[in-house]
Length: 414
Length: 151
Image 1 (tube, helix red, strand yellow):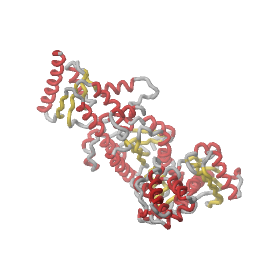
Image 2: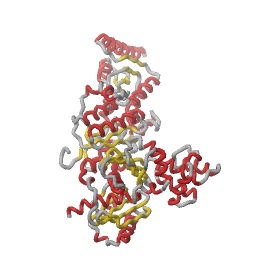
Image 3: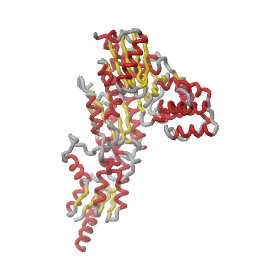
């Protein structure tokens, strides 16, 4: 690290400053005590970098990106992490972005994330991603924890549901799960459920960790020792529960509002993508399908297992038009089982097309999040990827477990 | 004196030549100077604000990436204002405002769409070509002055 506290992040971009979002990037970075820098490079390399890199692109600023990536990899620019960003919808930039990210990750070992921006990109959208980036760069020691110690609680304030667990000496002894309505009240209820089940009083807890969208709000409320974004927490929770903390793993978390695909090495996230622009690829799509079929969300999985997705013609992944396709299929005589299977396949296929292309899928593949409990979802993923999918116990509580595990590092200090 | 749109929009050679022949170059540098010296809420000054790519919608649809539209929000008005244009083809690499191939394609296209006198010359690679390059531009600029005198 360049100095004791500040995290230096290399901004490798084809011109984020021309898209009107530079202020948002700077703001997200500074709120995490990080600094964005432009890696210095030799201007002469602009003429040769295309050939060297193997990508002869038309835009000079994309060549500049490649030259900056090379400066990072060769250590000319001393940085702690890398943020690769290009315009959303630019095909040429999408190719370069992906290859540059892979190149930096594989050849430098630095944490790296890529993002495609529009002029509507805000600091809030970037915060979770950048927070994960700075945590991986700065707090690897935190993520090295493999055993939960003492009596701790983790609360995951998600967009759709709030989850809580109480853990004692590496064992889950209480769990809570409530829909997120009012963030604080839902967190209170979820924690109380977990405490009741564990037969533990709140004042006996040695430490509390929070994660999810509401982590800061509930973290302040509960006086938490750890308020951490869900990429690092969930990947830690996933490999902990799947007992794959050493070596490679891939974690896919299908949430109520967004999805994460994370490539994990020894429990530490490497490359990751975070989707969040389309409800059609989230648990919400499955919720709507179950409503339309008149079944409870918990029954959708069993239905899907019995159905054949190929019997249903789906023209769109969209939550509006996709559901319309499902309704049309019902009208044409498709069975609810087939429709349930098609819905699961649609969600998984979209994650495959939009997120798994950007990370390298290495086994074991751990599927977590509430949607992983809908049996049709892991089945559809196995069919698509032709590999075994592991759904660990407490898969829906993954964030809360990760938070309870990581925060036990604070128990040691007391 | 005519207002001359130059491409590359940040070319110091073209900007200088245009001024020497008594015309006004419409160049990126002027616009960027305006942006960074105008006091605003964004401090330190940022070239393109989140509003600018929306202004760029006049020149490219919402389907076009934000970085292209942000660049077009500066270049587009220069093309609109122009009374003549000089386009240099196959010039050396540039950065920033000239760093996006898609924005550059659109810029040249829009300049060609305008019904104004236009000169297109190749970027010189030898001394001989360099002399011819300057000669062609000088003749073009002189012809604009003559037209003005005749009017």
